[in-house]
Length: 507
Image (cartoon, rainbow, N blue to C red):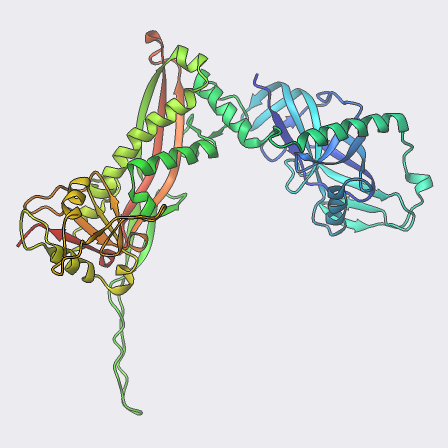
C-alpha cells in the first residue's frame, strides 16, 4: 500500500487557551464515504496542532488524545504567547470564521465498499484547524482561555456561542510541564525545519502525482488520491499539474488555443443564443407614429467531441523508470495536439470539432491572382473587417505563406512584414500579430492560404475532459507491454463569422 498523508475531519477554531473537541466521530461516514472503525487510531501521546494541514504553520500542541465510544477526542493548547499565527487563528475563532477539526493520517489497513472505505488501522500524524472538514461531526466542543477575564466558547453545529464564565481553577486541565516542554521543543524543531528555504512539505498535489505515477506503472487505481472520470468507468483523471503540462504541450502543436476563446464545460454540448437580425429604429417627429422592430434570434450549438488513442510501453520501463509519466504525457500531447490542431483549422465531419477554414459563413476577399500573393489584397482583406474586430485581429497562415510574404512591399516600398526586435513581442503584418499554423493551406489556385480575424471573439473552444487515462496491464502483457488508453473531449466552432475574412487565390 502506498503511504501518503490523508486529511479528514472539519474546520476548527481556537482561542488563547485550551481546546477540547472531537477530531473524528464514529457517528457515520465522512463526505467521501469513508468510515474509521473503533480501535483504528494509534493514539500517540501528543501531536502538533497545525493550521490547514500546513507544516509551516504550527500553532499549538495536542497533549491529550483518546479514543472513546463516540470518537477520537482531543485536548490541546494554542501557543498564543509565542506564535503570531496562533493569535490570528484565535481571532478567526472568536469571529466565528473557523470551527472544525481535521486529521492527517496514513492508512495501514482498509477495505473498500461501494460508497468508500472502512479503515481498520491508521497512523495519526497531525490534527489541524481547517475551513472545510471532511467529516461534518468533527468539531471543537469547548474553547477555554487562560485568563479569568476571557470568555469560555463552545462550538456547536459549526457555530460559536458564548457560554457563561467559568473558573479556570475548576475547568483548566493540569499539564505535565516536562511532557509539554518536550513537545514544544519538538515543535520548535519542526517549525524551524519547515521554514528553511526549499524545505519539503506534504502537499496534496505531490500525493496525487505520486499516486498517478504508481497507477501508470502498475495499473492499480486503489489510491484514494486518484479521481476517476465521471463520464466513463475505470478512466483515471490526471492530477492538475499533469493536465496543465499536457495542455501546455498542446499549444506547441495547436497554436489556435493561444489566440482563441478557450473555456470549460461540464455538458455534452453548449447552446449559444444567436441574434440573426437587428432592430429597425428610425428618426421621427415629436408626435409622429413609431414603427416597431422584430429582431430575430436563433441558437448555435457547439457539440463536445471525443479524441481517443492508446500508447504501449514496455513493462520494464513502466516498472523501473521514474520518467514513465513524462514519456506517456509527451507521446499523448504530440498525437492529440496534431489531431486537434488539424480539426481546429479544417474540421468538417460529425466526429470532430468544427474548423474555421471550413466555415462557409466567413466572407472571402479575392487576391487578384491565382499564384502570387498581392500586398494590396492583404491590405484590402484587413480593412474589410469592422474596426472592432480589425483592431484585435491576428493573421494565421503556414510557413510557406509566411516565406512568400516576408519579401513583399506595399506600393510605397515599405515591407508589410515587420520583424520583432523586442523579446516577448510578436512579429506583425500590417501592424497586427501573425501566428504560424502548419495545417493552413499552401498558396495555390483557388486555395485560401490566409485568414485574418479576431479569434478571441470569433472562435470558441470548449474543454469537457482534459485528459483521462486507463492503464491496461493485461491486453498486451504477452508481449511484455503495458497499454495506456487515453481520452480527451473538446468542442470548437466559429461563433462570429463576421469577425473573420479569408483570402482566396482567385481573380
